[in-house]
Length: 320
Image (cartoon, rainbow, N blue to C red; front, side, top):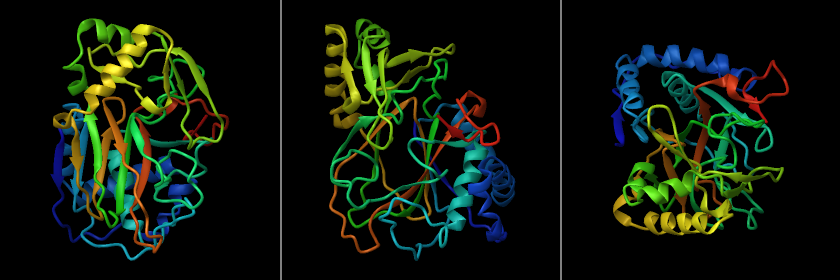
């Protein structure tokens, strides 16, 4: 299940800070350089983290990647300022590379490879990671997109990588459910209903262009027999009675406290969530707007950068 990894302190110097700017110019090359440097600094990490990935751990919590508090202000404008968190940035991208993935972002959600998961001013009317005013219901990210990119639209992320800058006053944990724990409560008929193309899923509020994917399934199974999900209750509507029963039953299951898992994080921690085999949520909260509110950085990653639909071949990390 969940894997916790404690990184041993190292006396090796960090990556030169002047190279951090490359994360915005060429995040693919930056990830490779970060991976090499990171695996050199933490020699045993690659074996341990790869074992967890190969065992299909739904969540990996890497603790003490940087043993310090960050003297930075929570950005309420929605943009990441790399100053003061450069070590965390290259650790995060080193881990993106260490799990053999590539970073990317969707051009209609962001203009930056790193997303600030922090309260944003004037976000009262939206449901997104940057709006503290509303609950985020159980979901996978970019659920309206194809799981493996077979449609004329870039696929959903394989992994969500969070770097923790500030855990905030209430220390709200990362809350997730392993898809397999939901499936244990479903019978064969339920699962078949989830695999039929009888659902409508729309894009979340964080995307500038509204997209509606009509007549798709919310469950699929790959060649290895592993189930994947694009369940996102808030943005999903049923087209049939069986689809409606599926959504109601899975929602009821997600309220079973025994299957809800919490990751309590500290500054410098890094968390990997498998976006296809977990669902996550976040309750609303009241920021103090004093610069010390909850602040994560988030990177999407994919096992195959070529699966994305791109408009500029020189920027394969910018997906449509």
